[in-house]
Image 1 (cartoon, rainbow, N blue to C red):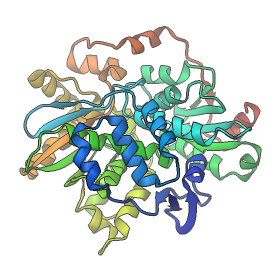
Image 2 (image 1 turned 60 degrees about the vertical axis):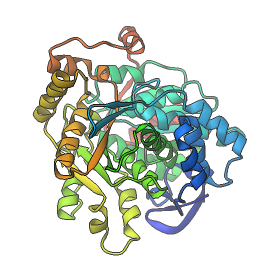
Image 3 (image 1 turned 90 degrees about the vertical axis):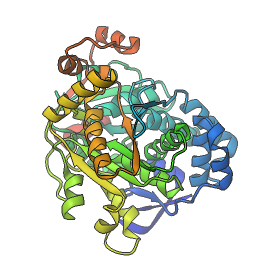
Image 4 (image 1 turned 45 degrees about the vertical axis):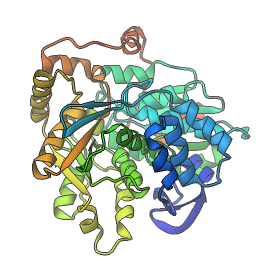
Length: 437
């Protein structure tokens, strides 16, 4: 498998180089030189396949002979140990629950797979690898759980002070061992900028081995495509066109769905659901991409003003006839909603269907309804990205109830936060990394 930079298609890297570097030297993003269609055998066996088998065949399809089959199966079977069940609301609306992993968020799929893949590529290295990751909420907890006590790998998580939920913060600040948390006095976009600066700093590159666990790393993105196939496997066959509705912040999850579509999954539309940080929905209307500082909302993991994976989305649609914008808006639909609208739909779904949405999926449910109103020949699958208990105070307030809290979250209440408060300053980050390696 070869991958190129979105900023320079002549720059090529192997799978191991792309995974372990995280970013190309030119600050682009790695993309596969080709995304092959899956074989008829895969589709013929899909109905009786489980998630590790789906992950293995999709990975093999993309990786080719980059990893021996026995090792690749080991990676998939170790990483994909939990389910992603479909809940049907009615014949048009389905919810894919992606919160059944260790950190109760969809990012467990990518983080655990990435941890296994990096551990495989890191097995012959003497110098420790430092994973540097920015989080707006769920990424940090998933990465912390996925890489916890992984030999030869240290993890440093940057998160915006006061802008993640208390339980999310406990997930990424209480493990210890090889996991460190840096509480940044800024926004998620500030955290993400600091991470990118670190990867481009030549002095750091000579002093330590760095890689990323954000969705900017292709190893996070690829496994997120697996559950699109898993959702399709669970659905009852239908003549209706299929749309996936994706609560979106950094747009890695939606981009993974586009990967699945390129591999042959019959997706009619990808629906991007955002809060008031509506950079991509605005682009789909105007054709103008205008990133801006993020605004804090109820759905904090989507508070992203400069979504990194938009570069990959552009890349996927740039090689077709016509403009990138015209090509993208034929497949991707965008909707954005306020906190008040989110609260109202959460209350409505709870009252009418006895189903508890987290705030992010509340935004997604609104987008699903809007899309289906205009596309009556479609059915839609909403990706429920996190367990509602991760946003306990807000969900209990909005629904005027006390929802159940899984034991693994309840135990976090008693743990002590351990994080280093830092300004938005790259030199301070650099000094911290060097001193703690």
